[in-house]
Length: 225
Image 1: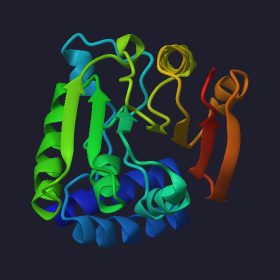
Image 2: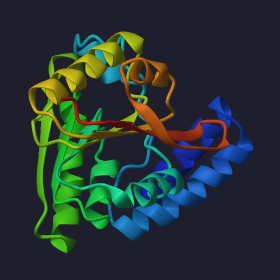
Image 3: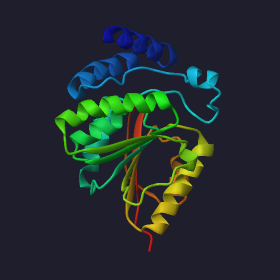
Image 4: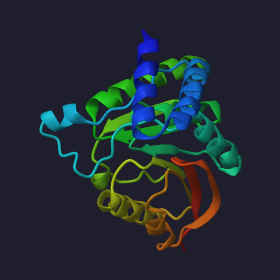
């Protein structure tokens, strides 16, 4: 039953963060999962991937972004053109599913975990019942080697990996922007390596931080001419 997922997640957050944050997050989890009819709650330290021989040294554990913060990000993105939404390190697909509710029809997610990609696909199937017009694609691939599609104009990141991989992702975004000039928006939750983007010409157009770990920045890269 899902109640056990909530309890497990509550104790995990309480132990690793603190009780106050855990109460806030679990309340959001229960309301959000019900509102969007998806199953994305939980924490995963990627031990199964490690046992499978997959290199997790540059990855961070799986934890979904809080619904409160995610919805605030999408409200701030109301100005966006909404051509193609890309979630790099998509996990179980929470951000992609919520993106459909905010008007995105072309939605792509990538993750190096096959199981997470399967979870994300299942959640998107539920979302598509409410929004039949969405076109989604989920791929199991290493972000370092992923070529950013020419149509992508909004990229979502929730601190999915360390500075090594993030540097490669920034490079890949810039290469795509140079090859196919367009404005690109990056919504970056828990933006530990935001400076990598700022150094390459991105501008921060929004920033919020309500409590520790509930932080996000929205960055814009103008069309490169």
